[in-house]
Figure (cartoon, rainbow, N blue to C red):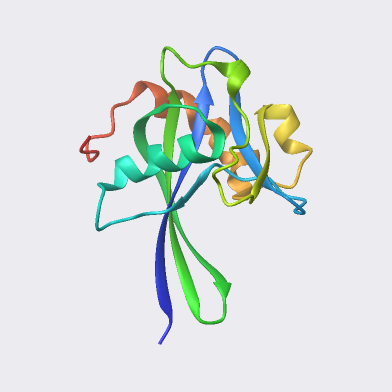
Length: 150
């Protein structure tokens, strides 16, 4: 029987600069939204999403809406169910302090803001961050998610 892992990923979008925050693990050649496993026994799912962003980037974020969900088979004996949220930096965010954290088990090596054109030139997961995300970002920012319970 395969093991199921539920993970949060937060597409942190800064509306002022029109940039997205992405992370890259040490030794990897691809970027992805910050996130990780949901500790469902001790936290609500939104809390887990915020915690993971803070752990990996040092940034406090607000979560605005559910973007999409994907099934990810990373190992033969496990399946990851990844939940992607749209988030944005809290008003008091220190952008100069954004960076990989030492307490992240040493996995995240780089943290960086990317604009639409820069993302098109890198290897990024999920790939929809190179196209579909940018087509839908304005409506995602202006329409309240009727299903999200904060």
